Image (cartoon, rainbow, N blue to C red; front, side, top):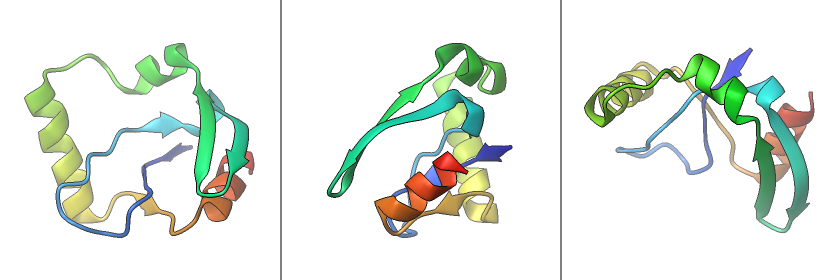
Length: 83
């Protein structure tokens, strides 16, 4: 399962990447901050090396089509990561 997340409320020019949930490990959360560990090997499996222009174009297309999840608070993000 892949999740595209944006911590900010919907606004233009948000950059998004795909992160497999299995590649994330929540190390700690305090207030409005979360510290995550990301398995780089898993990240590379779904994000093949491409030019920056291609990545930005794809992110804009995903954002425009609504292909992402957004979280208004860290509790919801952490719950999604731990599920």
